Image (cartoon, rainbow, N blue to C red; front, side):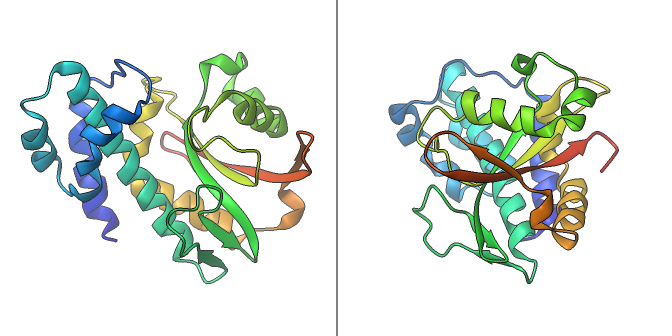
Amino acid sequence: MDLLRVEKELKKRLSYPYRWGRKQSDSWDRDTNFIYKTYTFESLLKKTEQFNQELRDYALNRWYNYWSAMAAEDIFTSHDNVEANKNIYDKLIDFKIIDIPFDHKTSIFPKGFGKSYEYAKEHKKELIQWLYENQSQEGRKHLKNRLFVVLYNDLEMQHWKMKSEIIQLKSSIDIYINNFSTKNLCKLDFGAGEVLSDIIWLQKGKN
């Protein structure tokens, strides 16, 4: 994947409002599934020009989030100690790091956590537990191993914009994978066995 090209295309979306008119729905997903084969922002605008505003916002957001996530997974699996999951329909595992399976989720720093970013970095297990309990209520909800990439923009407080910082994201993931140790993983138990998790932090202008 050409990460520079992906970053350039994602940043074209930043000048448009980031609005979710409604929660994820199967019907709107079907109407916007072309995002998986849409590689430029200009093409996306053309394909959605006849949509009403809510559906267009939905398509722009799905496209933006999907290609940012694909770039992240490409970065992870470029490492020798990371093995991609060849089953693209598996919602529980994106890749394995030294044979430990993980799902990956990029998340903006949640207001609902109710505590500061600085507090969260000092108490990452507390934030991880909150993320498991409060996010991904749709099809990807599960209580299995997960690596979170948590985004924080301390200048504009528009954390969603950090999803376009692909080169900075690569730097953070590279550092994490190159220094990966099972000793740094958080262990949680939601009643169905041990879960392993961790956070890769991505802050505006910092790794």
